[in-house]
Length: 618
Image (cartoon, rainbow, N blue to C red):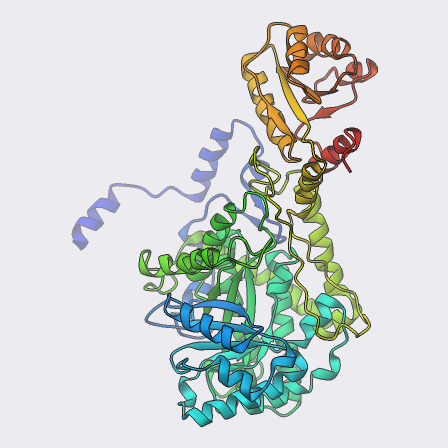
């Protein structure tokens, strides 16, 4: 076999990088290589269109094995299994227990219980966990941060009462007061000393974590991947430093921190993010000189983002969450939560929750994602992405540390300003369709209505009497602006009719009719497309007969000089007149009184808001 391989490879001469570049440049026929093929990421670095073996040989990421420091290739050596987690909002302990027992028989092996601080009591916990074998299931709890220590003591007492093996108890308490400071602007600094008490309560439980870094909240506010990762590292280091300063052993402190990270639809970059996150966190913990490298392992619960989820065409959310779950699984995370596709507009139905569970089970049972450790390893592209992300995130981490640490950055509002600026930029990009939201600002479902659905507003009422001490982070979903626009159209009681007056060049009129239909359907307008008309008079008459509120002339740039003004004059103000495109004769058309043009450089959202106003829709 080796001889055959040697013969095979000796027959072919490996091209050099320069030969590849020369061939690419020839195929580009003079076009700029950097503009056409180099990917300028939102994360602040560029990626080349191809990589070669010599590129990867320069990197350090492939040097370690799975399960070895710095854990870039994962925390495990023999498998890639993860916990399938489902979160439950519990208002009644008995009902919560019944639901937990039910879903444990449907493929879930990790439970996330969310309940208010008023529920924290021995009776509540005992009822909630009745019949659940705590050694066989990962248990995660989220409640009021003020009462987390009380909950910790109740849980420890319950585990002891049941005689459970401490090493077999796995789970976490979601205690993260800094999250509330960053996201809501509330001053929770007085709660920070509770960290030591929580660690003390669970010091004998090696697989139970009690300090959370909820950077997924940044993800759901629109943060770019580098921002989420860089701030998450600084966030985790803040808690680690606080505990170390309080006299807690660094290895114990690090073993009690759990990272909750989001997952965006940037598939390959998300795989690289989780690899880079382990690499960097291991480097940070190592500086505290723990007795064992095992303390440097990063524990990550990954949750699919709600930032890109939509209320209209909501089944597209299934495609989003599926690719997100795939990237997290391939990235080697500890556990995954797949948000149900209807989570943004209703309390998820049983059907939606079942589908969300099955999305992970398919990855395990049919695609066998849990069998191979770090399958992305060795991919030139992924290794480069991992290194580039690590470098960019490390720079942000060092910047935060140089300026006093994450807590001080939150107090000053620099973190909030950074994330809010990104969120605003992404909303502006979505308005101009520079960032696509499938089914919302691009290729919307023309005939869909809300059916009474409205976006949900998620809020926690704990500590609502506190005054806002710091800046807060906005968490508006990317699709929210377009959804409000479409709901306004629907609530007006009459969806405007947009009629495509197609004329002239066949290819151009069809392309522009399709573009215009997608453009105007984003506001929920009724679309009437046509095969074409011989004269503009014929087209205008057909539009008026159809009851059109908007007439869109669709033709080629050259032909607009011939067709646009006669069509506009013949329409005589009986409907809004729109030209599809930005022809060279635009000034001439404007001089004739035509004021509406739609094209690829338009701000779609603002244009449609303007049209709604002209049509009397508020």
